[in-house]
Image (cartoon, rainbow, N blue to C red; front, side, top):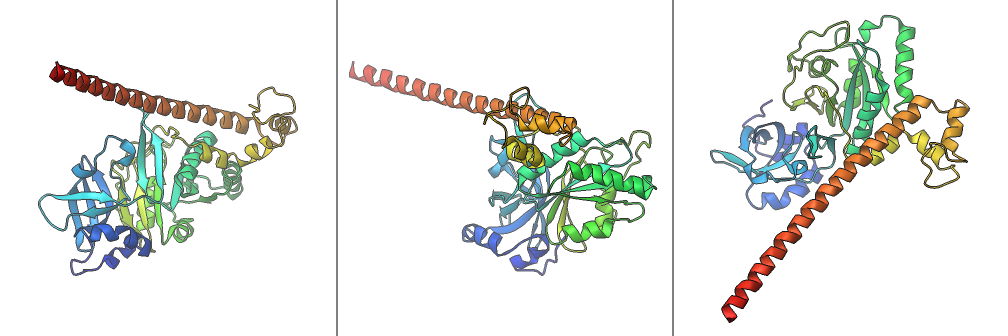
Length: 366
C-alpha cells in the first residue's frame, strides 16, 4: 500500500482519487506547509495516511470534535504535518459524500463509516434466505450518503440452478430501483470482472452483515489476500467478524475499496431522502392521494392503499416503507431534542455568566 518514496508530487495520490478539485480545496493548507494524504485506516485516535512520500502514521488529536460525525474517517482527505514525531492531522477536506448510520448507543449519535465514496456495495449472501427488508435499509443509507448503491449477491455458486438464481436477482431488483444488482461468486470468479469494471476509477465501500462474504469479495477484487477469511456456517450463512477496522485498499483495475467490519445493526440516520429513493414507487403513488398529509393507513382516496388492493404494490413493501419512515422520524426527533437540550444548556450557562457579571459589577459599585 506504500507509495514510492521518490514521488514528490501530489499527483502520486492519483491512484487514491486525488484530482484537480481536491487540489483546489487543499490550496489553503498547502500555503501553511501541510501535505495532502488520504486516510486509509483509523484506529484509536491515530490513522494511517497515504501521502505523496508514502504511508505515515498520524495523530488525530487536533481534529477530534465533540460531534462524532466530524471525526476523521477512512476515506477522508487530510492535511498532515510534513514531519515531526508524532505527526498530526491538522484538518480534513470537506467530504463529497459520507455513509452514516446511527449508533447503538442511547445518545442518538451518528457514525460515519466511510467518506468520499462513489459506490456503496451492499453484499447480500445467498447462503441464507434473502432479507429484503435489510436490503432496503442498506439502500436507504446508501442513497442518503450521496453514493451510487450497488447490490452484490455473494456466494452465487451456492445456487447452481441458473433459473433460480435469476429469480433471486429479480426479487432484489424489485426493491432496489435505480441500483444495479449483480450475482457474484468469489469462489468461482463469476461476476467478479463485471463488478471490478463497475467500480474501477472511483472509491467504493463494501457493506454487509457478518458472514456476507465481504472479505472474500475484497480479496477477489484486489487480487490478493488482503483480508483474512473465516469459515461460515452453511446452515444459516452466519460467520464471525473477519475485518475489524475499515481499510482503504487499492484495486488493480483502478479505484479504491473500503472494506468494513460486519454490521450487526444498521440504524437509519436522518435518511428521509434515502427512504424516498428506495420506495420511489410508493412516493409516486402518494402524489395521487386525496389528502396531501395522507398516512396511507385508512384515509379515503388513498392511492397507495388502492395500489395494494389491486396488486400493483406489495403489502410487504408498504409495511417496510412505513417501518423505515417511523424509525427515521424517531431518530430525527431524538437528534433535534438533543440539539435543543444543548442549546438550552448553553442559554443557562450564558445566563449564569451574565448574572455573575452583574453581581460582580454591583459588588464593585457598592
